[in-house]
Image 1 (spheres, rainbow, N blue to C red):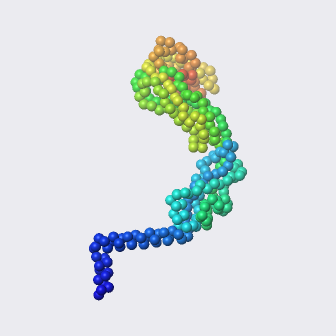
Image 2 (tube, rainbow, N blue to C red):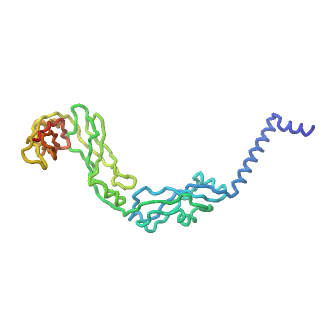
Image 3 (cartoon, rainbow, N blue to C red):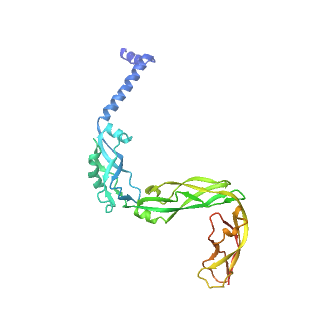
Length: 308
């Protein structure tokens, strides 16, 4: 009977007793955890990787793999730290012949990485194969053009001068195939709504696969003047490309939006402007393309021409 009394007293709702029981309970848990972490276990761990090759001469034409997954063995402490990314080493993968090497198999990775994981032991490289594409590194200079198609103006306002990009060119450096696929001039796309004053914008130079290309500079300054504009109607001569002479009208009526300062002297703007019809079937009407327009002259309306 006395034994049961001792048990009852031990678990009696006494603050002092329960403090002691709680401390003993947590102490046992901590002891068990520490004891367990000193044993050897295995686990799959994702290791970050970097590739060692001459990056002054070569450049990757696609994003390089960022990590490999390996099954490793080690003390519980070491595996716990690595699973949480604590002191996780970046494994270095050498590429001796960058232009010839297109992939590295998991079995090859085992030998390359075995000495880089510290106290851990590699059991298996879970990542099957790493693929990459490395090319000669190219550097080329490209011109810039300003695209204002996404800019809208308040009624009665428009561009009144030549837009400028500062600087007017960019130096691109990257893999051969990507650099050679870029057109000679790169558009700088500007956007804005209901503009009625001069603008100075900082615009990023964007190209295909921009993450693989180094840009110098990556951002350019774009300036364009904005002021009052008015519409003016006039006749514009029409040229026909690859069509017989005399099969269509030699001029057409057009309406343009121009800066107000040119309203009294529009001839300064329209010296080189003409309509161009590149190809058309007989007995049809076509809209000529306006050629030779300054960037601050906008087409409001063009009459079609009859092809006889």
